Image 1 (cartoon, rainbow, N blue to C red):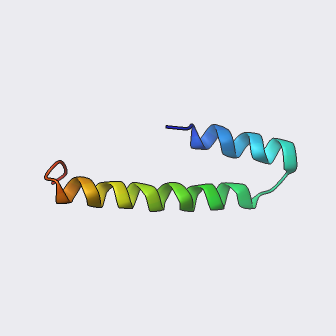
Image 2 (image 1 turned 180 degrees about the vertical axis):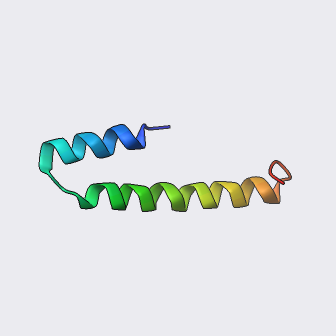
Length: 46
């Protein structure tokens, strides 16, 4: 799994895009929600 915080820091440092943090945060949250849903359906998460 990529280091999302590190990637956001590098993008901000290189390009100065403050939005990079927000878009990566949203991306991570969407995937975490999706993964938890799949794991829940398979009985891995309460």
